[in-house]
Length: 202
Image (cartoon, rainbow, N blue to C red; front, side):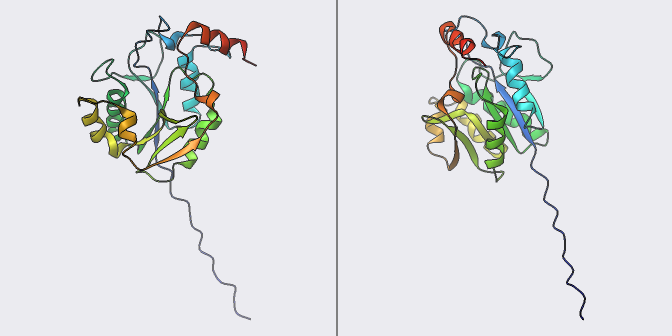
């Protein structure tokens, strides 16, 4: 009897490192106060809740843009404050590339219903280090998704151009999308909307 064939084990390649980024670069004009400091219905602030969600699925977390909320994470200032999200995305992608990460997973600070489980789905869908992967609810969510670091220079150029529209730039890219419930991606802009979040909390 011949011996059984030798089966070579195939170790899975290590997963590319993913940096979580909380976007806090807006003026919060309609809210009238720093959204990062808003109380989350489950406890803590909007910013701390966002950081905790990213920590659950990423290899590190930073905060993009200025906020008055104290935190322990590294803060990366926008190169052009209050000029749209492209500036913050470009700066954090550059930082990620310099620190051995393949991409950044972005969420805005003002989406209190987005869960770590949904972010894990987004992370697991991202199967290539060069493909832009975004959430979609009613439409594409440009600020909830995974941006590879190879896009840093292109987005930096976008951020200093006359047309800084991130969504128009996205429409020219090859992307993959992950569908989420619209409530998960809803951003809070007014005190009335904040009241509704608190009243609907479990």
